[in-house]
Image 1 (cartoon, rainbow, N blue to C red):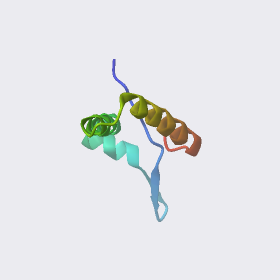
Image 2 (cartoon, rainbow, N blue to C red; image 1 turned 45 degrees about the vertical axis):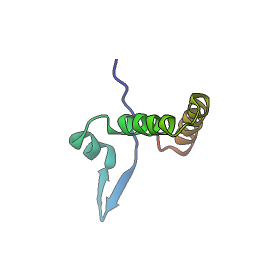
Image 3 (cartoon, helix red, strand yellow; image 1 turned 120 degrees about the vertical axis):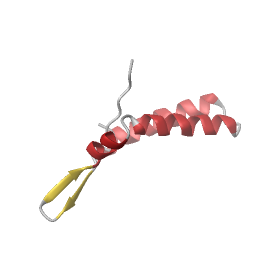
Image 4 (tube, rainbow, N blue to C red; image 1 turned 90 degrees about the vertical axis):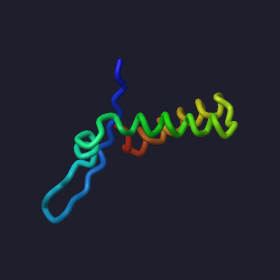
Length: 71
């Protein structure tokens, strides 16, 4: 089962709009989930509790949806 995160971020140059997610997916598909998993693993290695990481993950998800950064 694959998990796909997307971000609706776009950059507008002149009259042309570039969707950032399209370019990220062309270079490395599913890069955002991989980076987040590596960040969580790094936090575990530094001694952070798994409960704190879970709460931070929930907070990041809620803030991402609320601000529109995570679709």
